[in-house]
Length: 30
Image (cartoon, rainbow, N blue to C red; front, top):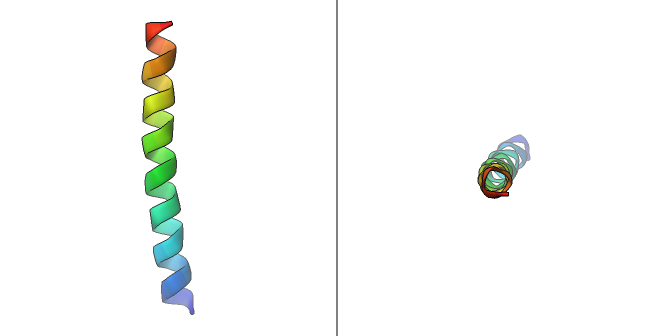
């Protein structure tokens, strides 16, 4: 149970970091 939650949390964090990096680059071009 805890391992699955940890893996899901890591996946969500990786996706969040990817979207944040994309969002930051979008702001730089504006």
